[in-house]
Length: 212
Image (cartoon, rainbow, N blue to C red; front, side, top):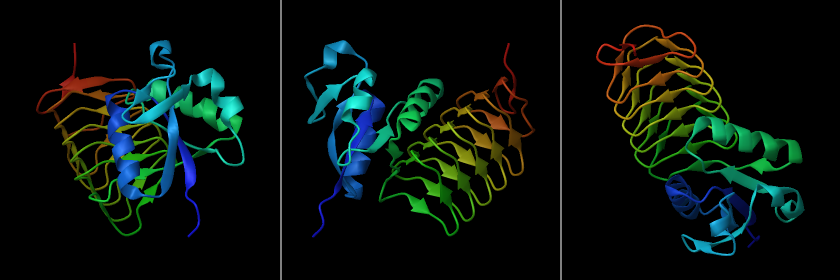
């Protein structure tokens, strides 16, 4: 039996616990440890794994035996920044897809993306790089989710929905078929989006309207 490739997880918070659990259940990688910029965590163990260092240690850790990573940070901006640094240094990104997620035919899942337990991603949906589809969320057929998007727990996207780079769709929100959501949009928890949303807009309510 071939040895599993080793994986470094960047981030040591609540989101990282879920990512670690998914990686364990997938069984594709051996988790070498974590990195986090919180100096109080250095030399400690987190969720059973050693904290190997901070972002400054990324170049030294990269080797022929250790070159896969996943960024376990929920905030879109922070996750994108760390992923960009990893990419520049030559790290390769792993995906974390829970065994109890349902992934349809023709689905594309970009590098570094996470799909959690109870999610449904249906036929011909596209997930870009560093996307989070959080617990119990659904992404229906032909949706296109661009890089660094976070689809929060219990969010439901109907068919042919587009979501622009860096957007956050809050817990329990719903987007009706064919709606386009722009870049860096924030959709409030429990909202129902029934019309297109422009870039860098906050919307909330049912139906969703621009927030004050």
